[in-house]
Image (cartoon, rainbow over all chains, first blue to last red):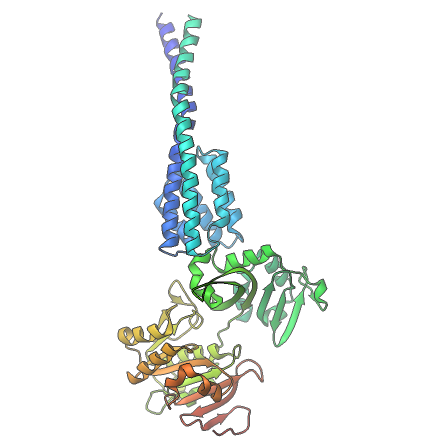
Length: 173
Length: 328
């Protein structure tokens, strides 16, 4: 009897954890987008008010953020400063690819962010400001879509995980 | 020295073009003064008064049709490199038509001007780029220093007159270095020099530190408009000598006048090929009346940095480089 109870608890918790992991994919994406957006706001401040050249600006931001974003900005800054990059667009895309691999951002987010690298730094301040504003709107849309998806899926996957554990348990007993 | 200089410039060129130019003979490469990129046109280099066209393997060619033609991508990447990937932080420089890169080298750019209220706001579609290799020549001012220095350990207000590309900035830089450092062989003690380096060419500051040697008693106001800079210098750093490059506007003249009236000595330059060119500039009218005590006139007749003449306050020739006596 004791064995049955222990086995049951193990099955239930394992399935529960699986469900939470599946749900995380949805619940963490909006957070990642928000975090990224906050870092882009710092970048805008650096560009519009500080007029800081991008390699320095990236370096400054990398000191203020944490986790994968920190790696993202410091990698780009290092490449631009190290003189091994001849083109911001390619370096930025490379960084974005890596960032998407380390976070819960989707490939749709990747395309949007990578596209921003084409306009970043390539015009005067007034123009850059417009690009930033447009980028915020697009990021916001992605965030809302991600939020909606989370709403739909997060609870479902969590319950599903737990319930499937229960089903297996009942079937086995 | 110069070998090192051209490599400073090459760092700001797109990878492919850098590769091509680096394949040139080292001796030839060292002598380069200008590298020109034009969209869909061959890369042309100038050095030692000669022109060189190269193909994609870095070989010299005579027929421009065999040369490597710059692509739109090359030009874009070049612009992105010279502006440190940040066009917005060079807005003012671009409006003036050039950017100064690390090492004090100038990169001229041309394209479609975007106007706002009749004034240039920025350049769009940049398609012509000219890299100019700047070099510091220690001792460039040796031949004129004895005319600038007064007996009482002071100096004369000096104006250097020279067409572009004749070593005007080079000689100014060396004058600043020697006046600031002091010249033991002439018994001249160093003076406090205030250098207003509007275009970052004389001292070539990077992160606030001069990359060129401008002497130990020199304060550099980097990237500051001349007229304002001169006044700030007088107020804040109590200089004995103020040096600045290429005055030309009305307010520059006013500020120079203020400095002279404040008892500060001035060393500056203008574009022109002789003293008449200076006297013809209406914007500098305030300075025409015997304010400068020495005029140094330069050309490139016998190579960059040829000294044509030194005139005194009454335009009398003190030293004649090449030409026959010229009295006004």
